[in-house]
Amino acid sequence: MEDAYVIYGGKPLKGNIKLSGAKNIALKVIIASLLFENEVVLHNIPRINDVFALLDLIKHLGGTFEFNNNTLRLQGKTLEKNRVDLLHGSHLRASFMLFAPLLHRFKECYVPNPGGCRIGARPIDRIVDGMKQMGVRIAYDSETGYYHATLSEKTHGTYRFQKPSHTGTELLILLGIMGNGRSVIHNAALEPEIDELIRFLNAGGAKVRRDNNTIIIDPVDSLSQKEPFTIISDRNEAVTYATLAIATKGDIVIHDARPNLLKKFLAELAKVGGGIEKLEENQLRFFYKGDIKSSRIETAPHPGFMTDWQPNWAVLMTQANGESIIGERVFENRFSYVDELKKVGAEIDYVKLPVSDPREYFFFNFDPKKKYNQTIRIKGQQELHGGALTIADLRAGATLAIAALIAEGESVISGASILERGYERFVEKIRMIGGSIKKYD
Ligand code: EPZ
Image (cartoon, rainbow, N blue to C red; front, side):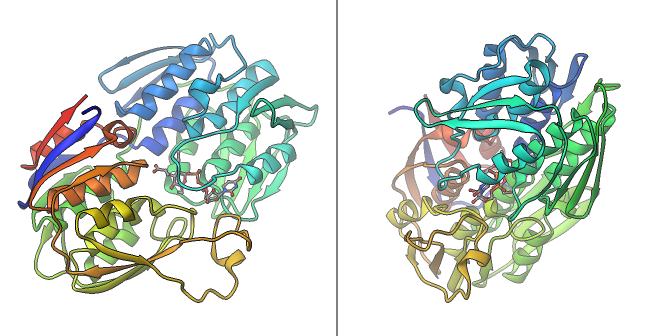
């Protein structure tokens, strides 16, 4: 038995959870740090597998760093390689953002087609178009699976995303900062993680301004950090522990939660009867206060119901009275957990919702020839039992752990290291709220 959790579920989880630094901010701020002339100090960096993988990649490129507890000291000036190797680059989707620091330092670089979680194809066609508009000459070699990029003379431009891209917006911001003229991004993504990246860059001397979904970037000669930067807490982690509190009929206080980044989640949770109490600034109490109602949600980019939250919401809906519907509009194939939940007693099936124009409705590139499963119907209230489960992607992993903690009896969940790509000290935190969990390496 390797890389597995053994969980005994069936009791209400109660206690306090301290959130870790946000994965989807930390990864980008680390990459952006490589643009800086001086050493960069970052606090509250989570010790999670995606961060370790990125630091391994950066070390391989010649970057130097010290990572003690949750403080990272990083030096991008020592970068000496401009080719991201397949081993490191292939399983970390955010690694394609390294185009920016590598082009800034070497004017030319080689980056493999990104991998990341197996949630759908996750192409980067819009991002490549955007890079070309910003003066990057880029070609894909399907033989090697590598993109080859060089800088042209005019390194600035204006680009409108046909459909928003979270990391695509972030990469174009990084490219614009080092450009030789003003760049403008239209239909830029609105996720708050992007605003934290902008805050970090501007604190280092950048000139990036957001006007709703338009982002204006004026170039600067160099970036240097004036004082250490602290990563804010992970809102996706907050949703996982909040869901756990209600689904196990427990009572959990989450410290350093930011209600303004969870608005849509809090609204939906209140609608289905979950107990929510704001104790102090950034302290939220989630508690079970009676029957959970069924719901109908569709995911959307911020400020909508985040796609990262729907897997956790699905397992909560197995405990609701009546039938619930979840429509996934952002990613194709983000229901890897469905078959696993069925193994422990959930009743879930795929349904087709009448959608007038799927090309408009979905945020991925809809292909009329492909068969999609984008909507599920969950029958509640289902008694879950233990079982042997397998994690396919990060948020699905948390979903399976929640199911095991709801279910009476023993469950074994393999693929713990995939869950730990995004959840710091998971075993310790689950124990802190009374959960019975062991990890086998
Ligand atoms: C980021 O992914 C996050 N990852 C995801 O979190 C998050 O779910 C997503 O944004 C939405 O907020 C990181 O920040 C590292 P997109 P990203 O580009 O940037 C398609 C997690 O669990 N698309 O906004 O990859 C794409 O396939 C992860 O922490 C194209 O077709 O998301 C997707 O269907 C999972 N072509 C949709 O658009 C492109 O060129 C949205 O993708 C770019 C994207």
